[in-house]
Image (cartoon, rainbow, N blue to C red; front, side, top):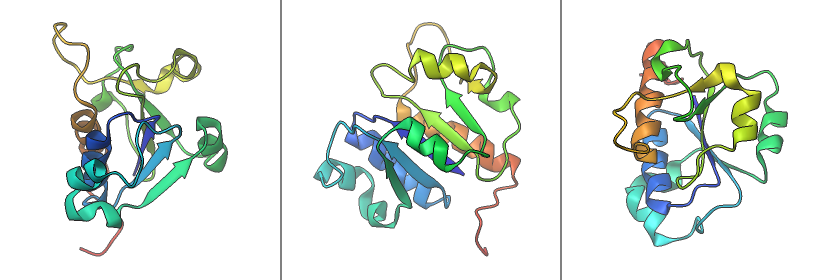
Length: 154
């Protein structure tokens, strides 16, 4: 699987997601600009001793990432859809995209990909779940659907 963070702003979230990626053999894609340096101690602290093991790819733009994987399926996590993350059928090597913590995925991208927008149900009281929690929830559902095939000998 692949987790994509568009313009991540909070190093702790990225570090936590990186740790989850390592332990599930998932590639982490970061799209610039980043709201922090990858050398910052906060990202390494939240990723613990796993950060150096992250299969990390950094992209200059969303368009560059999409051009590199033209045949792949991309799913877009947002609060602006009714389709639940558990209502889609994931395949190995799909991409799950998350937007910046403060504003989410740009509307233009969501509008171009309406059929692949997914959400995590929650009560109306809050704006959204924490990014690292959301990534873990959706990542584990996608892995469950492919029988937790981590792409390595167990």
